[in-house]
Length: 111
Length: 113
Image (cartoon, rainbow over all chains, first blue to last red; front, side, top):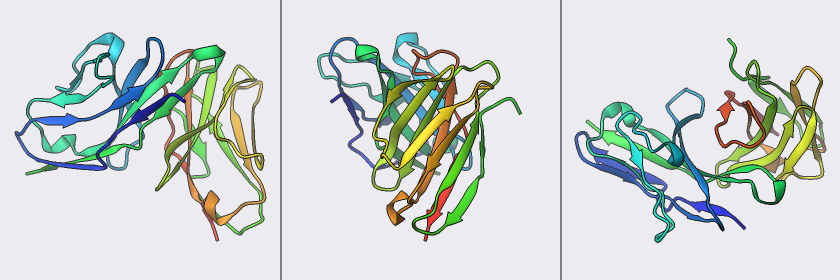
């Protein structure tokens, strides 16, 4: 089965330190991967997707097919980055459309 | 607010009962998705509808059913409720059926006592 794995439940970093939230996937073919974020008391929202190769709020994520990873990175963490982050993979195989989420990593940025 | 709206926000009921959760997608979105979020399982995909038709099915129990109406709103029906059904149920919508860019509602928190 296609799946997305986030090995860390909780990640704590100091303000100004680099951040890397890990995500590994197991998809056949060419996966479409996303990062979603949920800030406190807000709804889950799309942060970025790999095909756009953009930087949002200073975050970037590169698809590494050799390592089957899609880690989310930011060079300098800010307090407002504290949130729950979910990696997700889009599976459109055999006409079945599903966005499968990892279990999420809670990022806590320490002032 | 033209975003995804879900009602009710909170619901407390007893085992064996039946509840209906309602979702209105964003204006213009034709696809609706339902997810269940529990502490130990994370976000589990339940079912997807596109323009009234079922498109994809995930780990949805037989006690659960859903539909999307002509006005595009959707309802998730949960019956013969068990303690383990207590969870946050999210609805999301998207403009097409083949995209991973979903817009989520705030969720309906179901507590089964």
